[in-house]
Length: 254
Image 1 (cartoon, rainbow, N blue to C red):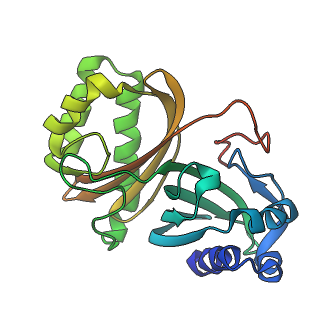
Image 2: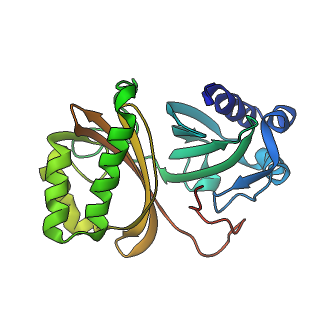
Image 3: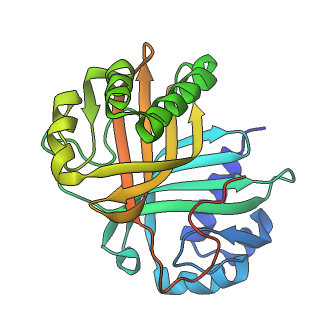
């Protein structure tokens, strides 16, 4: 059975601050990986009146026990800005209960040099028979980016991305030329890929590295068409080391 309805209902209960519904849908020992939210369901429930955020789900996907979402959060000043964009991952356990949550967030930005926002673009899920093929392709791509020589990394990018792919990163323009033009100033460095999730033509990579020398988590959403990556969205968040509400870390995927 699909786990999307469970996660959708849980997200709705969170936004409505419906504690009873949250307790019905989630485990009491719900594991939290957002570094600024305490782990456990009851501490999370107690925090909701302080947050009072609203959310718009833009995209929702499912891969095994994981449901991953592309969301816009408003009234989100406690997380850094009034409007934040996130990728959220929920693990649903074998009993159909919400068991674990990971995310990364960044402030909404103006349209990028190609006029694209952090969340606009296609949402339709297609090519379900190619999910594993696309995931394997993303794993190979990041393996080359992380472990390959500069020449191997460049060849992997050329081989996997359509030359005119659509770019939603706020600092880069469309296409390989737009990405390469932004690279010197942005200094994106990938060091380890922790998880790859996918459904059909969409694949989400979760990795860590540095951005301008600061340790960060990278969430990269890639859309495929005809065996090539034709669109890219991302969220980059600094990995905090102080003021933590839990010690679970931003990774630790099963």
